[in-house]
Amino acid sequence: MGQHMASLYVLPFEWTSTMRPLQDQCEPTPYEFVDALFQTDMGMPLTEVFEEFDPTPIGVASLAQVHIAQHRETGKKVAVKLQHPHLAEFCDIDMKMVEVTLGWVKYWFPEFELTWLGEEMRTNLPKEMDFTLEARNAERTIKDFKSIQTSLYIPDTITATKRVLIMEYIQGGRVDDLEYLADAHIDRNKVALELSRIFNQMVFVNGWFHADPHPGNLLIRPAPKGSRSPFNFEIVLLDHGLYFDIDPILRVNYAKLWLSLIAPASPATTLDRRKYAELVGNVGPDLYPVFEAALTGRAALQSSVDSVKEDDRSCRRASSIIDLQPQSKAELDAIRNAVVSTEGLLTSVFDVLRRVPRRVLMVLKLNDLTRSLDYALMTTHSNIRIFLITAKYCTYAVWQDERKRLIDAMIHKGIFNFPLLRGCFSCWWKFRRQYAKLVIGEIFLDLQAIAIIKKAWVKGLWRKGFQGAHQAAAGLAY
Image (cartoon, rainbow, N blue to C red; front, top):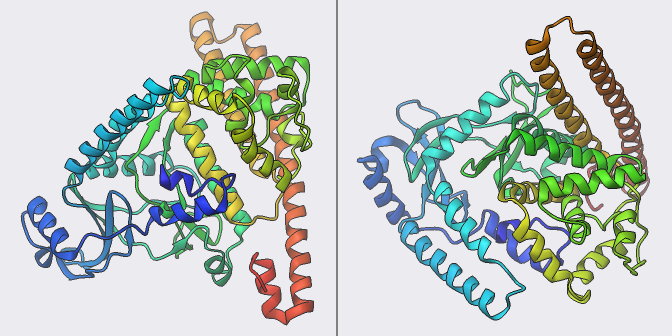
């Protein structure tokens, strides 16, 4: 939870900065204890498996810590992920404490229904504590992206037990480290767009997604020789302990919900938004505005506000996602203050969280994390740029579903059934037309983003010379 909160830019800076160390800077377990754990699980000491082993971890999270070592058998430099000893027993105590606490909260404040949080913790934490499951998840994701040209890279697994994971070591920087990106001449706009493509591919096409992609689990490095990346960088995804699949029907309905949010406003579009929100999130008209805001990370759209007769006009509200203006300080303040000051809103938020299916809740978490990365990278493209990527993947997902439905119908009714052939061509043409419009929009917005970077470069050059130009173009202070 703390790792997630550290990534929510709509929260006050004091909260996020306090929680950020939980992503990779927790208190480490002393060397002698991890050595004992390794010997218990592997049946041999660290010195027998590794020629060298750095006792100082390079990263420490709440469940495990990672050390660099030299593997004797392969001669490779490896990363050794070791679970904190006694974690299982302490986690069991923690989970019981959480369940009891949430039970008391429900008893005294029935409107704050949070017992589902304890149930989720009870279900998901054991998965993250089993490193053999993490290795299998990583292997499956590699297969999912095998035929796709992508900058995504997943380290190879060498050995995995329940509490010990030995994998390929990757040298890189945090994906939100602007100085590292500048030194490596990596375009931060392209990084943000690739992150969006990777996770949209997982959710809308693969139906199998990484549920914890906070910045501590993402590295970036210059693309090595022989890389499949279409860019000069690779995005390295770590910590594959928590993945979720999405039912095909839910996945397609979720895609249709996004397409309705992106479509121009109209009475039919408004009906579609509410229809698919109910199918996806199990929320009715009364809770729809809260669910929509949770989905987009923005203030509710105009049609949603009108439907609940909201009087707050402190910030301009768009009629669709495409109409969204850059998120202003006024909008951020309105979101932050509304939860505290608007009567009944906090209760509605908790009600939405209780009603929403658990898979959808994990997708909302994924949305928060990917949006926060775009924000942290200080991108120069339009705020709707990543939504266009989402629209492309949603359009593709809906087309694939329609295509499958029509092919199945042809199998039963005959391949030369004219109405079905016409329907297949019509769906394909609709898909190609929508996709082409989105591509044209992407090109236009990318040219705008490049122009802003060039303008910053010239401004930096004027003030501080070439060093200032380099820093300004990279989004750094100069």
